[in-house]
Image (cartoon, rainbow, N blue to C red; front, side, top):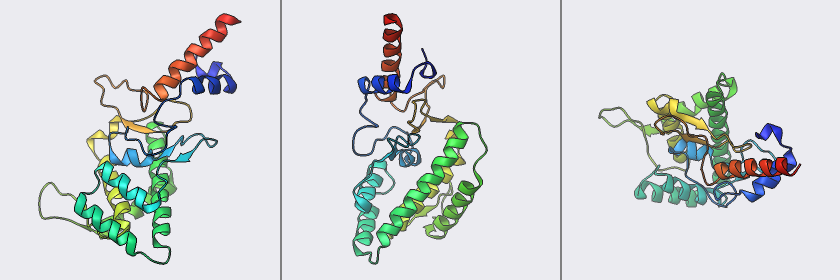
Length: 226
């Protein structure tokens, strides 16, 4: 029996039975297969307004830790960014946090449209265009091929610029066709489907996949008891 044939109460009960480790635990999860997808996935339960939650909660320092784990910067660049954040005054890091979340919302909207076969929202497209222009202005272009913009990793904004440039690579590269959105109700996380037959449905088989199995089992049990 599918989710459309069960009540919200039944789905919630089944979800509690099938809770996985990724969406409902504190801290970031790296299930996307690409830093940009993992960036968008730092908001848990993107499509469920009653459960939506931040996964990076330690301010800008937490974002720097996340960036290091995501492989966006090496140790030297990460140290420079941390020093820049420590030296920031006048609410600069708070403004940068807001700008990071705005970029995340923009990319989430574009990826939602991509994975659901819809046209990109105009506002999100324009926001990405501006983000890319700012990122390129603040980046280096080393004299080597293939061409690759490299953020300097010296200012707090360089984390955002690095994400924008990686988004350009993803959205204009060969792996774009592999981007999927998790089929779990309310999840909204993205991942690269690298399975041979392109059959991956879940952000994690132990999370939303487990919830789906629990919902199906619960529905069968209810049906057999009725």
